[in-house]
Length: 138
Image 1: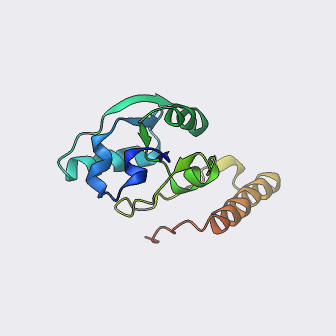
Image 2: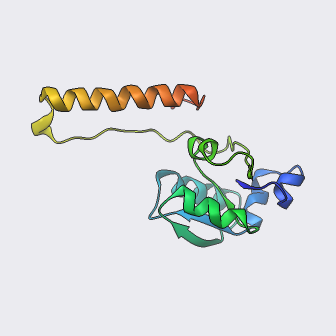
């Protein structure tokens, strides 16, 4: 994700070119961050992380006024201000699976089951609405 007037937004580029620019990173380490670093290594590049923050809104504010880029989950990129940013889906990084965890003692609790199912249903609807790629079942 970059601004519309960034060099990457103006020209065709290959995946390795994104590592020629400084990056922001989701802190501490979002699931996809390791995949981005692995891709850089695979391409013989080094990822130059210049800053990190715990929210995408803070990172997008940093990107907005600089030549820094961010590699974010597709859903996060789609929810940010579309008019202000240029984004391109990177197909070299596989979709990141989402998981739900809860303590065993609440597994059969009807109230917890209700909330769990509600969160899962809302998440599925949001994923479908954003037309995000699905992870392959193991």
